Length: 350
Image (cartoon, rainbow, N blue to C red; front, side, top):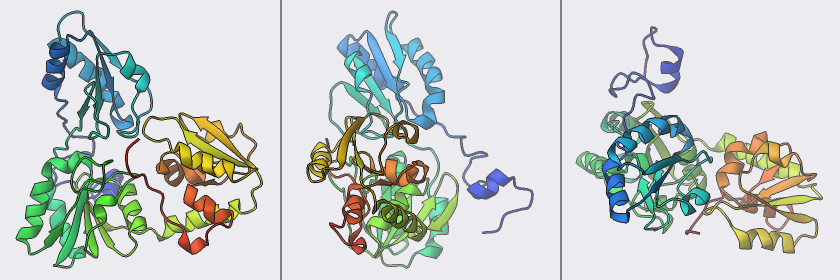
């Protein structure tokens, strides 16, 4: 795709936004479902409402609180969680215990609870223009279709659009960690376990499709990003080189720090303890927020992260010592050969 010279650098890096109805990437409107929240407050005679937003939407929290206060009865308090939030598995349990209604914005439900209201914040961006561009990277025939929670409201439209163009569309709901058919998470790509050699991922960002391509290296994963209006093909080779490099650096490690994440939906207690029990030089470290700065205080040669896989894959290069997934650890200590190294994912719920 060719772009006019008058486009700004930001527009060139994002893609051509002229056909999306968006002048800038952040020009999106969300339905915060305030009436549903008000109904829950009235039904439960609630006095305190807690709201949790993902990192990218925290700046909008005060405005949502103001709009909600105008609709709520006098005396109902609205509180905003400042705790980092990276998914439906990352609930602010402290606030949840101290409010009558707890609203989690930006993600689909992962844990059933009468107290939690999940507001997925479906995107208003049209998906068919970028899907049209993606046809150049797809072969007519069998194709898998996946997307994220923000675009699930248009999933059936995507399916029908592909079928009208001669595709046989394969979809499934991965496992109980996933709410919808065809949904993928940054830690779970089970919905792509379908009988097709190519998968169309409709959504923003590259982490999800790259992770999908790593878990399913036999599939051609085409990324149709309707937010940034870009079509690419997932390439995980460079990422795999980084992971192999981390494993090699950790092969000489003597002292291992085994991280157990205490976030409600990210802990793998049995796996963390199994590593420690089988290695006299491994030490269990419990943490809520796992960051490079916090780990600098520990005199370890390498770390194993049993929490969210994205801690390792997204931030791995930022840690001062090698940070490995449990599977990579097995390769580093010689329990498995390097060619059996797999991408770390979460399956099931907490």
